[in-house]
Amino acid sequence: MTRTANIIGAGPNGLAAAITLAQAGFEVQVYEAQPQVGGACRTLPLTLPGFLHDFGSAIHAMGAGSPFFKSLPLEKYGLEWIHPSSPLAHPLDDGTAVLLERDINATAANLAEDGNAWRELLGPFAGNWFKLAPDFLAPILFFPSHPLLMARLGLRAFPPARWLANCRFRGERAKALFAGLAAHSFLSLDDMISASFGVMLGASAHAVGWPIARGGSQSVANALRVYLESLGGKIATSTPVARIADLPTSTVTMCDVTPRQLLAIAGDRLSPEYRRRMERWRYAPAAFKVDYALSSPIPWRAPECFRTACVHVGGTLDEIAASEDAMSKGNHAERPFVLVAQPTLFDPSRAPEGKHVAWAYCHVPNGSTFDMLPRLEAQIERFAPGFRDCILARHVFSPAALESMDANLIGGDISGGAMNLSQFLFRPTGNNYATSASDIFLCSSSTPPGGGVHGMCGHNAAKRALRMLEGR
Image 1 (cartoon, rainbow, N blue to C red):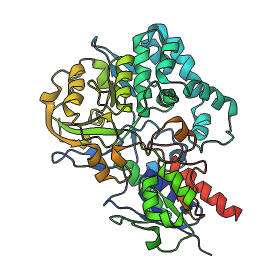
Image 2 (cartoon, helix red, strand yellow; image 1 turned 120 degrees about the vertical axis):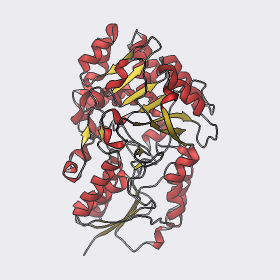
Image 3 (cartoon, rainbow, N blue to C red; image 1 turned 90 degrees about the vertical axis):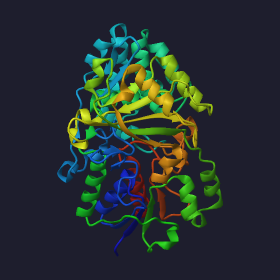
Image 4 (cartoon, rainbow, N blue to C red; image 1 turned 30 degrees about the vertical axis):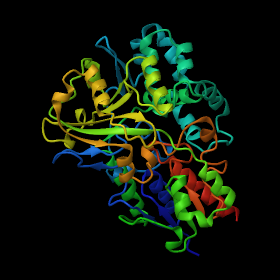
């Protein structure tokens, strides 16, 4: 008997679920609401002719180290990773920048008195990345393959980031570098588990780097699409799904959507208790994002910033902590922590000759309507005087505008839901990917291990579905 699968959503996780099931012999049909696959992993002409911008993800801190991506021949289907000489720069007011180098010893040398502490904190995980990643990127609450290594990670990852940085480091440079990494969590740096993002993102930078995709992040989604099609999978774009009941009958349905959307399209198939648990799901703070067409590279004061495609703009640990604390309390930081991507320093194909693209975003409360543009650009100008003079055009994405481009970005949440301790451990419920309906599974970034372009949510969900089918 032929087994079939409907996949709702063609972001990296939906495509990963589709590929995993196609590899297992399923006939797979993917439905995508937008005209092209990718979800938040798309590249679009958002400003001027000839300028190609990444709508969402641009720096793939988890992409090169994803166990699922590494299992696929994506390079044969058009994906080429470009590795800048340094994964990250963090400029400071003294005109220098702290560099996060691929080589952990080179990073340690940049951190002077904190070099040994940096090695001791991140070295065990960077050196064992391919043992650690399958466990860290797996479903929560399972017995890991390397329990001692995971226990060691837990001890270092569960505390608040500000506490850990102040305990581990003496100098402001190491503290600032770690704070910028931890701020990817969209948590206050005084919240539990905020340190986990600093530890894992730092370890991944040392182990596998933070590459960009040649041609833009769309290349990641396109490679997944073409590989899926080589397995016989089919994709229907510009095809939103209002109700699962409207789809052809299938063995399983995988939903690359968030809990609110799952309730909308499948609520009548779910038990009252499961619906109540989904209704309690909390969304994360939002991103306020700006895409730029530039006449020249961003004129950073610190020359180290030209060695990387990713720059963390925020100053010291205490400044970044103040920014994230304001956001977590529903306020808007006067001096926000800003993430900047400048891919055309390393991939000039994405802009007219001599011109550049960049994007920047800061964190704001979910659903915010406040215009952060002046504050965001003032922060970049602080470390790159003359930045505004380089701007040819900009495209501003408020949280609502982000959601209009990708229905999964509820209120501008690019993380699939808040990463507080309870939602980290029970994301979105203790059942992880399974729902109360035996043939419906959730496979979005609202499931473990959460946000990022790595495909592991979709892959893990499909593996869970296969195990449940075998158990029947």
